[in-house]
Image 1 (cartoon, rainbow, N blue to C red):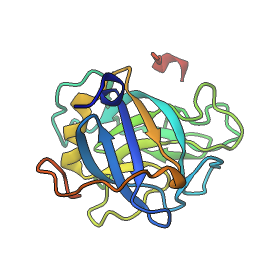
Image 2: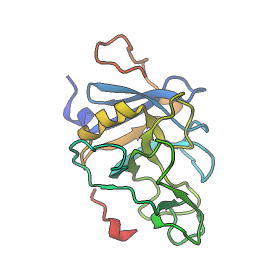
Image 3: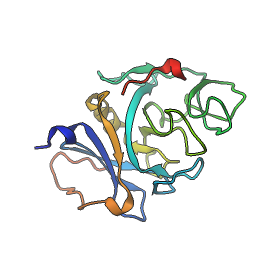
Image 4: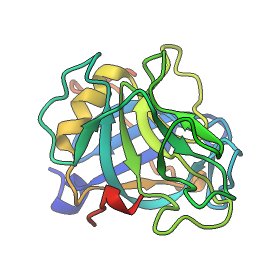
Length: 204
């Protein structure tokens, strides 16, 4: 039985140091996941495609209310608007913040044609405050059907992400393990295996 700390920690680990696929574990639950094309790095930089190593809070959920019904969740949540974007320009005063498009700075569109951002969790990485060029827009979001690598986020199959969301709380932390800290292999024969601090938006 998982102890209280494990039940409140979403741990992500790679299958192997050279790959991008791994497992996300929360207590006794496990889901297949995929990470950044640049692997996992403690010295992440903007545009390197790597998933940052470390321990991070989870800020809030954004979702497409025209595509899904969000299950009951404990994290703050709101629908994604057509003009919502996320600034990825380290020179911008709104770097790593939600912005309204069009924006004078480089920004990623959250209202996508594909399903990757049908539901996403904002990870509290380099946002309190944003500094340097250490990276932005680190989310937990929907994986592509072929489980191809992300640009630095953690991605789960759509159904698995919707299964995970109700178990996340304001006290839940994401822990991304370094490649050398992978630990013992995950037993994939278990019956329940899948194949595959407060934060105010006004501060943005």
